[in-house]
Length: 238
Image (cartoon, rainbow, N blue to C red):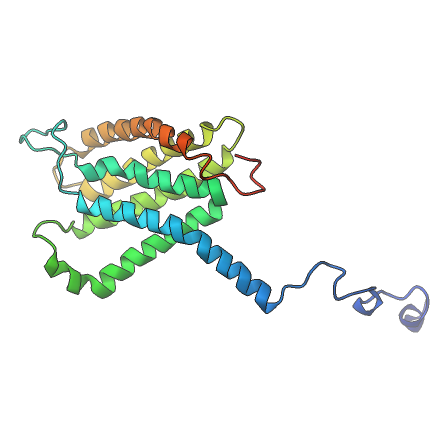
């Protein structure tokens, strides 16, 4: 068959001009206002999760020098502080965001808070530092260790939580807490204390068990908040 027949005859190749109602046949075409409304919706949804995680981050900083007397080392001082005990509360904030909006929002929550903290340190650290009490600022190694550990542990726990959603309400948060505890300790203690002479391995094992226990206890407030933070449609009600 000649090329002209293919182009001009009844068997010619179809093109976009052959579509009936071509402008709407593949669904609604987003306008500028649709995109603006979607952006505004996402922004409004992120406000409370970001503020909650920022509050947890501030608490972690403010209580990093408050010792817990039950955990003493060989010198009679406590190696565990109230800040260590508050870490699972930050993971609870991430889990609730994941439950409500899904993993993309939970990961965005972490990225936004991390960007805010890093920006605050880089651009306002010199102004804020002199107003803080002496000895309250962590070392650079410790700060990087905490940040990296929380980022890695949160990302993994988000994936675990989302994969474990189901009819048993406690499965996803429990596995999320346990995975967060394991990876937070695996990253933080070597990054912050390896090679310093601190008995960090013994502390890491104890702290991992403590985080796991706190995760189990935090299932109680998670259960109490389930009706307040219901998942959006598309997550099967879990």
